[in-house]
Length: 98
Figure: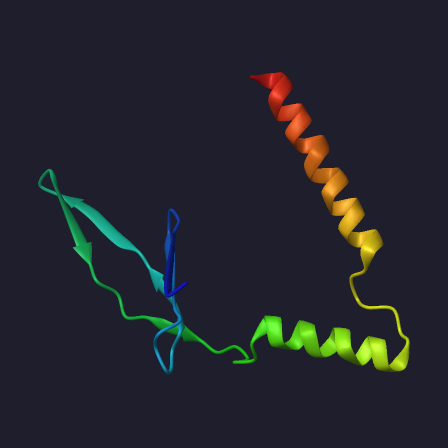
């Protein structure tokens, strides 16, 4: 993934993984109707700082640490089973409603 844009009624969020800094930015949307024409004001971005750690790397490090120390991982097989069961139930409900 390189860029993700989420647009809401009042705000817009842009995540740009290619940028070195300011990867996550929020914008206040300003769109007005003037004389029957839409006028869009390009607002300045508000940058949101967040850790640059890679989630998959952290998850793998945690898993290896759990093996070495014989601790239970934050998410284990029981969590995976429960999530799979919930997805199956949700899919079943959707299938019946069609």
